[in-house]
Length: 564
Image (cartoon, rainbow, N blue to C red; front, side, top):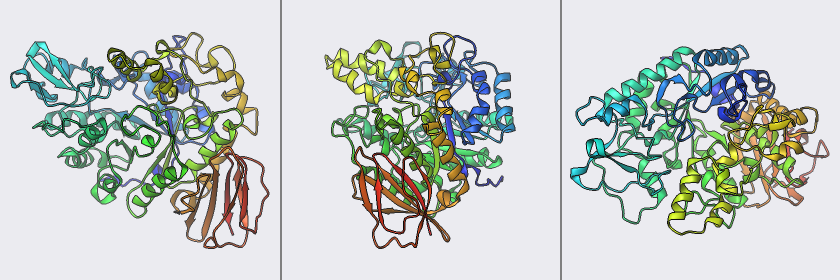
């Protein structure tokens, strides 16, 4: 068994959505050569693990998460030779590559499904979940992307329904079939043998199904279905088998996307002794500002910092002695972090963007950044449905329209909630199309690339969001206490200031973050003892070497001190 080191604990992850990163062919779509072109830039900002969203062959119903060939590259993105060059270029720079593993479902255009639906006797029939029509209407299952929210789709060819938790073009794979599992393991080995350094596993808790397909409560809400999907009877059996058959044979990193997993079950996935995964993304924070009755709707009451702190404190405690956590504020499925958890008003944009960088880079757990976070990219807030490209928004709009619901209210909600907010092209410079492409991009570019939110502008400004990000990644790497140190929250009820210490042996750091538009004086409790402080980094002006316990924090100011 390969014994992994701690590289994935000490790494800083940078997620690249290839369609929106850099276009070298002039067709308005980012590509693999576009990433190769920017490898020196990626290295320069201080990250060292790249998570690459799917680049496999796909008809693109869900932007690559509907895979039709797991061992080929989508021609729109390039060739396998391009991929091999990308991987070699990353490794030559001391960077790791983590790919997306999407095996809860495939594309309906995958050869397995084409065979599966051809006849009930086909050997691939049992690679997917089918319900024969002669048994009547199948038990209700909720779908994320279906216009009718129905996860069963009738197929005339064999007079049966197939299961799809996501789009109708994303049929769920049947993990209960050992032949299907072995084919997945063979595919994983193909990529690991190439030198890929790990997988981010898409909705991995959903892979196990109760194949008796029991009825759920008639009044079950989407979150009830998600919790049911995430707790299949053989989930951990499959993850242990995957580890034994594949993961244990390579020095790789695994991180699961884990909607529906509660904190009390966290160690079932990442306790080292269980030999399953390294870490996973929980969804408690991602639901904090959402309507409890509607997973995709923003909560009109907003969110409280005390609740934000409580979530992170509880999850830190879960991994205090065993396992390892992941820290993220955004990705391709959620709005831009500075627009959601900070404040993208021009008066507060810079400080709140850098405050969020400081937060992620001073917490325990591997930090994940989404491309463009390092320059403070913001929500684009489209005004009409025609501007959207995401199946989630488009199909929800169709559903609401058929129900006669308020479409204007939905568009207003999507300005803050839509996934497309995160999918606009990278803003490289102030030329036409922000240096992303020489032609009109597949999705609109945020016009604030002309107002300082671009790489070229910020590289020249020592006070920029980008240059602060570079400084902050260096701070984390230089101080093991910020990686492994014990986390202790201070004043968990304060609604402006998030304060905590990180302690490793005799090293102790104090982190102060003002999550508000107002200045605030924060007084440390007597339990925090020290003789003096040494300022490590701040995103705004401050006096150094405090020997007293009152700290003035300007709006969205972040301070990191070493306590002496």
